[in-house]
Image 1 (cartoon, rainbow, N blue to C red):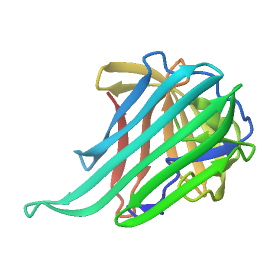
Image 2: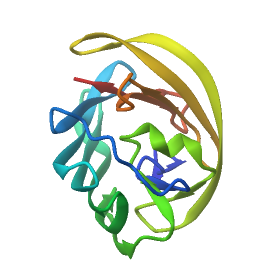
Image 3: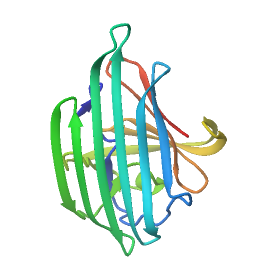
Length: 197
């Protein structure tokens, strides 16, 4: 699976630790997906339940349009559900349409944290499981310190991490450990960002 020619690890999982207990207090995290200064879609997380026993629903809907003729050059739709109990993943299922190529996945806990990226627990391991196809990827994490970033609702102090290896992503997490921003390079060299609303 590739988004603009890149492996899609935006929905992936890290091995160890296997607990993710910090839920966003508002019940959701919603992002604009921006490429070349244009809003090309949305990415969201919906949380239900309580710490230790909860469900996370992830949805991504992206469409890259060709200027002037308004034809869709690329589209990507993804939905996944993570079921957690006792702080451990019980099951993850996903459905993806990657520019016309369908994928389905249903998997139990493989001793790995699903890194749909929503919680900063994912930066504490070195293995990622792609939640589109279940493949395990090796990554390294660099801690780049605290920065102030702009979200749609104002500036936020966030911790910056950089993933490299089989997956390249820059990730920012707020003081509660919730995802605040994502950045990566597309194959054409353009920058794709997830900007929190």
